[in-house]
Length: 133
Image (cartoon, rainbow, N blue to C red; front, side, top):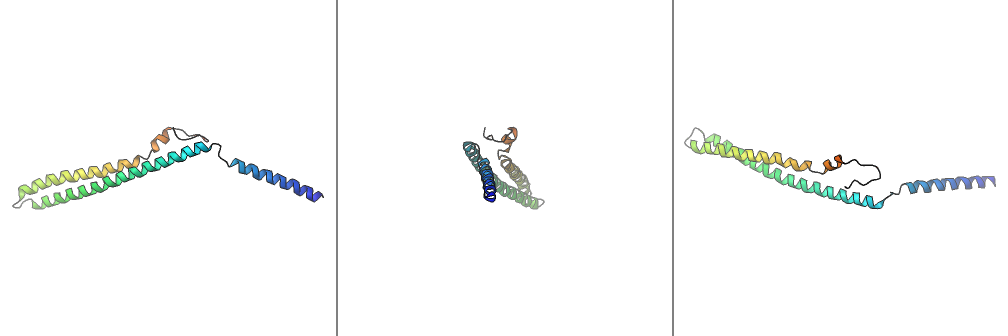
C-alpha cells in the first residue's frame, strides 16, 4: 500500500512538472510572432531584389569594362602606324568606356549593403517584444 501511495505521489509530481514545462514553451503573444515573421519575409524579399539589381549591374559593368579596355588595347596597337589618328581616338573612347564599366562594377556592390540591417541596429530589441517599428 505504501509503495502505491509513493508511486502515485511521484507520478503526480512528474505529471505536474511535465505540464508546467510544456506550458512555458508556448509563446506569450502569437500576433507579435506573426508580425515578426511577416517582417522577416519582407526583409528577405528586399534582399532578393537588391541581389538581383546588383547582379544585373555587375554583368553590365563587366561587359562595358571588357569592351572599353579591349577598344583601348586595339587603339594602342594602332598607334605609330598609318591609322595613328584612329588609334588615338580609340584610346580615349576605350578608356572612357572602360572607366564607365568600372564605375558600374563598383556601383553594383552598393545594393548588397541594403539588406535593412541598419534599421535593426538603431533600434534596441528587448525579449518578448516585436522588432517591427
